[in-house]
Image (cartoon, rainbow, N blue to C red):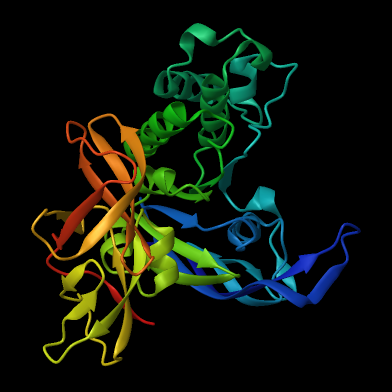
Length: 349
């Protein structure tokens, strides 16, 4: 599989409200990653981590103070040079859709297309996104999900080398956000379109991306599949950000096992530090009335087929526990715990 996009050690400065560069405040620095042809990747992280700035730099809206961005071997940006956005062969879907309110669905999708194949391309995109019955409607007559499909069809119509999606589902409700992210992934895989999604929502990232780059404070903390980030986090920030769980203090014994208030665990990574912290997921422990390791039920959340309990350990630490919905507990009840996971990620305390 050939490399499509190469982002190499980029440095992007902050610009104030007047557009004057504040180069002393770097928003993104020492960030490198590649996108292979046909791949879908996601830049994930909390607000202010630099993910949108990175996307804007790829799109050509932010100049670089250092590093280089290339697409199919052609330089898009480097210090002192920024190829104009319209010359980059990129498509972009914005958070607010940015549709033209005075144009119909058909006219929005075809905006910027010309030549004898324009009508065919518009029809192809309307078929792909299921918009044929809405062809003559204006954006104001569409739901949020329908508007997002129009924005996607318009971005794909010119057949871009790479599609950029800037938090495109954030204005939708939770159920529609998850279903549409799956739909968009399917559409892009059908057309063989490579894409980069920016989001702070890990559920969107899991549903959409082949690879995820988790960012923090302008740096890439970890790059990998959703499974790798969840099962093999490189530090406690990744462990806490991806999925649900609790960081529990423990002490390493002579056998290399970690003794905690929730029981004895086998760490998935070897650390020599005597004091360690374990990331325990809701399925890392199970109930065992005979266990000497006790916890008090402090909160119960019903989740359909399951319940999520928030427990207080004897150490005062909080722990999440997932149980079947038919199991009954009451607030204040005490339960015994025993380890259920074969190994768990460990970090230096």
